[in-house]
Length: 364
Ligand code: H2U
Ligand code: ZN
Image (cartoon, rainbow, N blue to C red; front, side, top):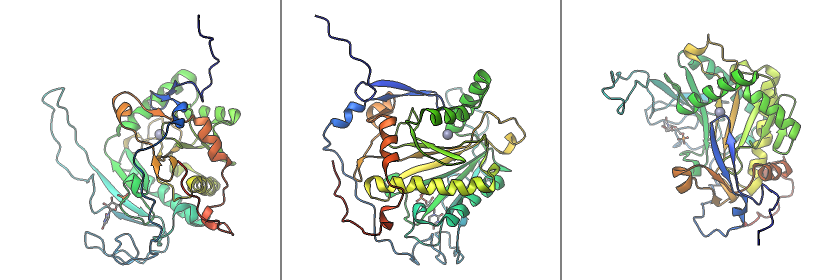
């Protein structure tokens, strides 16, 4: 006897979804959330961070590894990384001898940007004015380093789980004389989309999500946060301007204010999800700079990616290993389920609630 054909339900039936920005596919198998977890449990992030520590090289007045002493900074502070992965002068490897053994020159600069003089604060707990200062500095750095380098990657690794070595709120900037892989792919896919469809991909995508609503987490007059249809990480989000903007420095004053607001709202929701300082890697992608500044980059839409690793609780993370390394990415809940959970969370940070209830134990 033939089995009755069931109607497709994305939460029950595995399927693959296309990521048009990265030109790859993700396996969505939402039924896997039901499996028990007996694997690794993560340590909760350190809660008792001193506001100031003379021995922390990111603090105002502290000495860094290179011997320099930080100024007594009062808002943001940018310095050159003492252990840079990219340096301005490095000899060229010369012509490659064989197509299977290719090398090219890599030059650049690495900076570190402290968001705030205090070590015991994070972006969601900072004032809007303080977050705005961070945004202005990001735009300034993109202009300054972008005058020389074709790619300026601004990124924040938050939490030890994401390899962050220092609790002081900070991000990094790596500028390079080449377009890194992600930049090359996004440049190609957005260029092809504009050519084929006559509109910038992510501008059209944002409008589609605004209509559909099911993957929208937050929006305001200038910005939109969605769990993208093709998300890989459980609570991954994409932050998009609603207007066509190619680079950070092109943001208007009021768009920077509304960005500070929506970033803080998103990060409060993230922290509220498991009542923990939510780890993630985030970063900005905009049109290439340097020699590309004079090119037509209208296929680009500025955006930020947030990639948080937590899956079920503050201590159970998603691992992208086995199948993900050898075949393709896989996720355990649908983008719509993740968006709904984030959407329904309060925007007031749990640490600022008037009557603090005892911390919820992690639910497995
Ligand atoms: P992460 O924790 O995200 O790795 O950032 C800290 C950065 O700060 C790291 O890249 C740099 C490290 O190289 N750093 C200095 O440049 N000087 C120091 O004295 C300590 C840390
Ligand atoms: Zn991107």
